[in-house]
Amino acid sequence: MPKKYQEKNLYTTHEKLEEWGYGEWVEEPDDVEFEYLDYICSILRNSAGVLCGYVTLPEGHPWIGKEYMDIDVEVHGGLSFGCLMIRGWVIGFDCAHGTDLVPSIGKMNKIYGIDPQRRPANNHSITYKNVKFVIEQCKSIVDQAIGVKHD
Image (cartoon, rainbow, N blue to C red; front, top):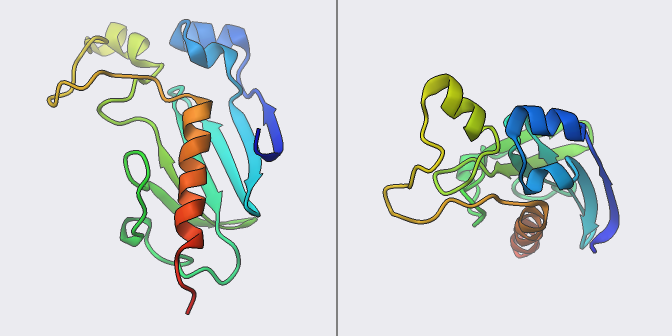
């Protein structure tokens, strides 16, 4: 378990089942915060049931103020967020890409006729990216951030 680990639910079991059906997401927390190598990392579940991972950069880090798409970091699906927040400059990513199982896909299928068994063009299987996966991705961002030279 990472240092200073906290978790909580934003959605009740009933809400998760009603909105997304049963899956690993029903048993998982929706909001996780932990510290890794003195970086604050957080995970939040969005309204589609997808987890997003975030890392707060320390003061003076060279990535602060950069557009997230200009930051050279390897993370699942690439960075999709970068913004000044209350606690500092935060960068992040989401788990709603072509090979990601999005919990709300079942409901979307009923409403819009989307095939929940769709396969990406590259024929990779679609998998749900869970809290454990997102923690490891956040830690990878931190490891890469530490390797960046400060001006």
